[in-house]
Length: 242
Ligand SMILES: *[C@@H]1O[C@H](CO)[C@@H](O)[C@H](O)[C@H]1NC(C)=O
Image (cartoon, rainbow, N blue to C red):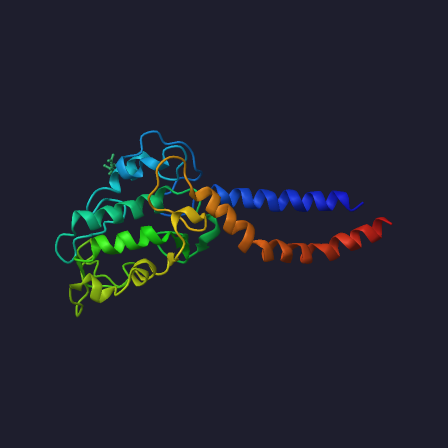
């Protein structure tokens, strides 16, 4: 008598985790479901086997002020190429990754319905990003909000000043966490740990396993709560049957 509800429960929570492991967020340019995209461009190519971005999005991710977000990287003079490549990679990761499920949150914004929050970044990826941008300039800490968009692209708001990168972001941690309002979480985990998400990778996507790890571990209290919620119902059902 216990077997049927237990099986159902296992199937339901199994299906839920499977969805979270391979899915696309409800963003501005994301596909509805992940799948192969053989023509992904340059820095987005690692996602070719399974991606939430289209070939068009992957090409646009490499352009300045592309139609994706009209975002101007060069708001305090031209951004250096070594810095810009990290923002291109960040765009590829955001647009293409099918394994962000554990960190997707609903959000009340005009341009998207979901966002990512506290995605644990690998230490090397955060540090090389900061190192390569160290000599660039910016006028804002949080690049998600507060810009002057009156010209159609983002400009430094009145009263802000272009400052050295290291003045705005004294540490790699402050940059990775603050630049996209906590989309990323700084970690000390190295790429080999399997406990952090990689912006840069070659070969098969290592982030699937990382998402699985966080889903199984952080998710434990969730399925426990679900079980606690359903058990009384199942129990009374069994009593009724008896
Ligand atoms: C991508 O699609 C947009 C909108 O349809 C279009 O304006 C743009 O030219 C396309 N970009 C590429 C690289 O094909």
